[in-house]
Image 1 (cartoon, rainbow, N blue to C red):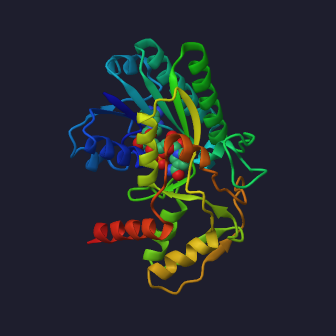
Image 2 (cartoon, rainbow, N blue to C red; image 1 turned 90 degrees about the vertical axis):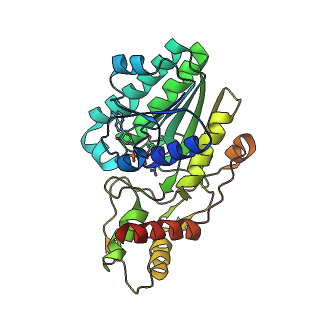
Image 3 (cartoon, rainbow, N blue to C red; image 1 turned 120 degrees about the horizontal axis):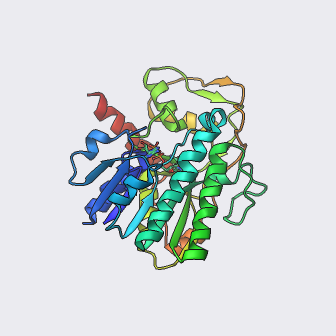
Length: 306
Ligand SMILES: NC(=O)c1ccc[n+]([C@@H]2O[C@H](COP(=O)([O-])OP(=O)(O)OC[C@H]3O[C@@H](n4cnc5c(N)ncnc54)[C@H](O)[C@@H]3O)[C@@H](O)[C@H]2O)c1
């Protein structure tokens, strides 16, 4: 059995769908805090356990026959983490330690941790490689650094096999605009024929990776035979927020001028992944161009609106 924590969330849902397609036995653990694809998930024959990853006793009863864990459950809102660092520590750090404890107790073959480019903070060098310094600038980023360190320690002390995937800016169908996702925010504004809102001058760049490519990375990590590794999961290509806004406005056939607001605290100027390590070791090759990915997301919005 493969356990996906956070399996009712954006990346988790897409991952579960692919695991089922591969014929694997899947069990989801999610407290439904931000479960965006619950109704979709219910269509599949999976075990859906509404449990909080902070509840070690409940996890113990559920995870006895687990072969591997894709640990995606987390709180992901950077701004909320600035207001409530304690909560982010409880869920993202203590929740991860619970999963590691269970893995140690039940001799689970493999843990895959969904980490984030937020561990790097403001990078000193672009593109960002995995050995760049970790200088998080939010409690969210720090919680991922500590979760990673615990994973490494459990590997070193107890021999757990752990792969850490540092996702960059993931986008795709079912992404919520509430907590994350500038792409979703832009699309929802443009659909209402309102101009997209850009914080700062829009020249900041990001590495947007389509969710199906992230799912492929998750599966490659699951099948990999290495016992420890840390991998950037992006595309290796950067686009500015201004270019992104223009691309979406053009694809949606409108003429709108973005509205500019002051930069948000904690926003970094540039972020793009060096993905050569994932290419070499995991054979990870992101296949979806930004334009194709955006086309699919727009199509999904259209079908949802009919
Ligand atoms: N979306 C991105 O661009 C991005 C980038 C980098 C890293 N990540 C990481 O990928 C993972 C998945 O992110 P996502 O975008 O799918 O987010 P999401 O919010 O859609 O999914 C997270 C899931 O975890 C669940 N959850 C939250 N707290 C929980 C708890 N205490 N117990 C059990 N379940 C809980 C939520 O209900 C939700 O279903 C997270 O670990 C996130 O930090 C995401």
